[in-house]
Amino acid sequence: MSKTNIHATCISYRDNGILLIGPSGSGKSDLALRMMMNKGAQLVADDRTDVEEKFGRLRATCPENIRGMMEVRGIGLCRFEPCPSAFVELVVELVPAGEKIERLPEAETAEFCGVKIPKIRLHGFEISAIDKIILACYQNK
Image (cartoon, rainbow, N blue to C red; front, side):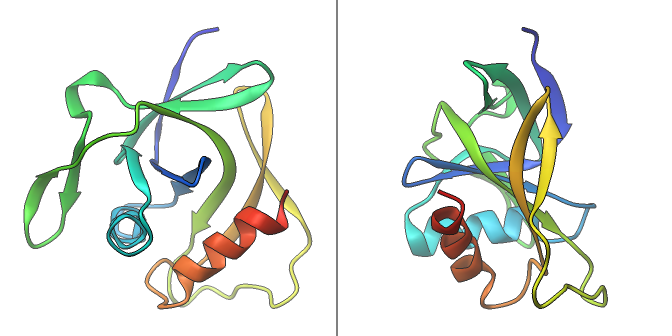
């Protein structure tokens, strides 16, 4: 199958591929950076992510021209040791700060390349966002 390039950031945390989606400025790179610096996650791709269906799962990789690079607001382009690929286990949709998030949401999925992945919605800049992502990784197994 062919790869599709999407506007998303992807990290790998303990073999869980986590795809961060949302509008520009919603905190995708910031949240990925916090996961990397504080929880040992690895960068797969920042801002642009290639996805493809492989073995019935969604595989994420980074376009060659930006591999290992992340745009960090206030600092600029930073280099990180990249994770070559990750099978996506969770999609995190980052929503604007003023948008309401249900306290007890119904289970949701996102679909990419014909593969459905569990999805949660978060405010990216909340201090608890990292912990909620980690919790969701294990709740969905």
